[in-house]
Image 1 (cartoon, rainbow, N blue to C red):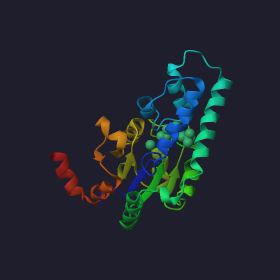
Image 2 (cartoon, helix red, strand yellow):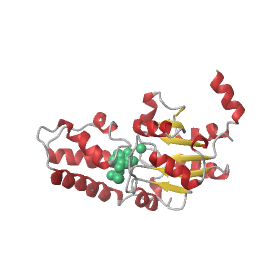
Image 3 (cartoon, rainbow, N blue to C red):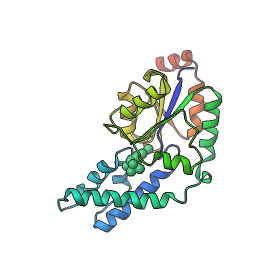
Image 4 (cartoon, rainbow, N blue to C red):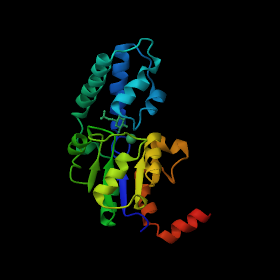
Length: 224
Ligand code: BG6
Ligand code: MG
């Protein structure tokens, strides 16, 4: 087996909470009278809450005091958390459930590597609290993606080397973080637009074929 562990991003990979993030930021932008669309939103993928606010404020004319920034960042999180209340295991795509179960049966370790401070809450709501061998999230990190810290911490929690890990990501900064960590990356969704990852997935179930590759098949693929 080429990889000993898979590190999954959460929002936009395991679940569709990237849409909840978008709706919450859109509602804050509307409250502030700022133009905000899905193109700007793609720049927020994988980026910390605070940095997301800064990106959103790029099109705001007035300077904002620190206290006000904190207020709107908290507002976004409140609106986001409110929308998560309806999340249940039913919201998991069957392909995700199937993939997690097959990867587990293959004996490959699994972790979450997400910038979100809401990671554990979301995993609980989805019934995935015990589905992973390690959870590395936005709590207690010193540097957010594209810094490799989140992924390196996940690898170290699982006791594996970075080169033994494959990261699944939908965000440009997430792919950059995986590559900076010395890990391979499989891009999905918006992440496939950048041509930066070793693999592009049309759907999450495509991951299984990549993991089934023996090292020899991988070497032949690299030579092609
Ligand atoms: C990432 C999302 O997973 O988490 C970003 O892609 C988000 O959009 C970031 O800003 C931080 O999330 P949270 O839940 O801590 O605000
Ligand atoms: Mg994501």
